[in-house]
Amino acid sequence: MPLRIEDYAVIGDTQTAALVGRDGSIDWLCLPRFDSGAIFAALLGTPEHGRWQIAPATQVRAVRRRYRGDTLVLETEFDTDEGTVRLVDFMPPRGEAADVVRIVEGVSGRVPMRMDLRLRFDYGHVVPWVRRVDADLVAVAGPDAVWLRTPVALHGENLATVADFSVGAGFHVPFVLTWRESHLPTPHPVDPIVALEGTVSYWQEWIAACTYEGPWRDAVVRSLLTLKALTYGPTGGIVAAATTSLPEELGGVRNWDYRYCWLRDATITLQSLMYCGFVEEARSWRAWLLRAIAGDPSKLQIMYGVAGERLLTERIADWLPGYCGRPVRLGNAASEQFQLDVYGEVMDALHQARKAGIEHERPSWDLQLALMSFLNDNWTRPDDGIWEVRGGSRQFTHSKLMAWVAADRSVKAVEQFGRTGPVTRWRELRDEIARDILTHGFDARRNTFTQYYGSAELDASLLMMPLVGFLPATDPRVRGTVAAIERELLQDGFVQRYTQRPENLVDGLPPGEGAFLACTFWLAQNYALMGRIGEARELFERMLDLRNDVGLLAEEYDPDARRLVGNFPQAFSHVPLIDTARHLTDAAGPAENRPRE
Image 1 (spheres, helix red, strand yellow):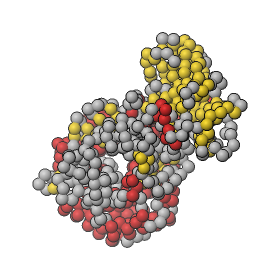
Image 2 (cartoon, helix red, strand yellow):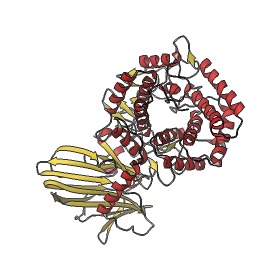
Image 3 (cartoon, rainbow, N blue to C red):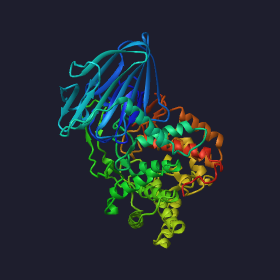
């Protein structure tokens, strides 16, 4: 049986990330990038699909985990009858090659240990050729090469490399795993203790720029560190999650590959980082954006590879059993969808960057002019919506809302920042879209906005209306929408994304999934904007309780199984956590300076 999703923690070097289980096993690691082939894929299969476990070779009585302060250095302590041992896991900032460092530290007694390394390249598909080169163990297959360096004796056993050793109090045993392209020279050895000190310093220096001060600082800081861990340092791209195919419903088919840069996810991540004082990430992301979407605005994709790649063809890894069932997907067919809302997200992010004081660059404004020209002619088209439905395009209300945001931010760029553009037409467009939403996206009989024009369905994305400044939270239509969502989408205290019934095939998939965590955070923010502070705090605290023992969230939560589900860790969950904390902390009061505008 696989570990629960919440039993994993993440380590990373801002180019890729590894998931480390409570049992001391690294079950997921793609190298050299987030979207590369996995060398450890046990998360989606069995240990035979690749893993690296270091754990006591005797019965474990208790396990405790924590990150070392405000860093991405993970510490796992195992209590046994023989004593206590600590496993320190981290990935140093990338040097000439990618490294994973694991240090076993004796805390008390003398504990027998077992290391089990099963390297399987290309998502568990390839067993490498393993040999000794001097004191190093080297595994090679095709383009991949891995070096393992450690002072303990290693030997082969059933297509695995294993070691048996013990560690006493006050002593430590290091292991360093290094990946490099197989045609390149052997990488220089990494000193594990020096690397540990450097990694701790790296994360501490980065988080020192955080400007958030409030009662939920620990939760906000851990979320910020997680978002930074999902940033691809060389380009500034931001991935949605570190994993693929972790199901939104255990045993279901909603298993997607999230190791790419969604414009939507990246822009909201960027805004949260900027709000908390991390301006450099905004500059890097803007440069990534200009490179990624250069060209015809009609060819704008909703997602790209971490370096701006466009071809993200979806395919099935049929040799992997999957996490609680198949399919295991590599790539994402939603990259070919038309989603109108991303135009609004991009325009809003660039507007927020200007408000944060990031200097203007001509190519950035030229890009926005081109996007607005396309939007002016295409905002009435049906699209596939924020939830990337596979049941056919519709006139989604949220998509029109974000088209309004694009027009509104363009007007503000002229009015507030002196940009040059057809502001009269943009004002007209903004008013035209607003009238269209209020006429076709609102059900006056039920006093609620609806998922798409002419429908009776509800959608939690409508909670964004006051958050982006379209209507105040006190507007009767917003209050009515919140009340409708409370009646029909709030289940077991958590908000479902949208109406799901067998007869409602809007997403083209069988009904059933966990509660989408971002939607519940949005409800808490609406409560705050309405002045329902007590309810907002209560809901927010309940959401914080869903985090695992090291402060991480997946995409969704299954109230029946009481488990996190979906890809992990998920930017789209940690961003609204930060935003909700800010809403509740703002000394100006919940009704002031709240919407993005």
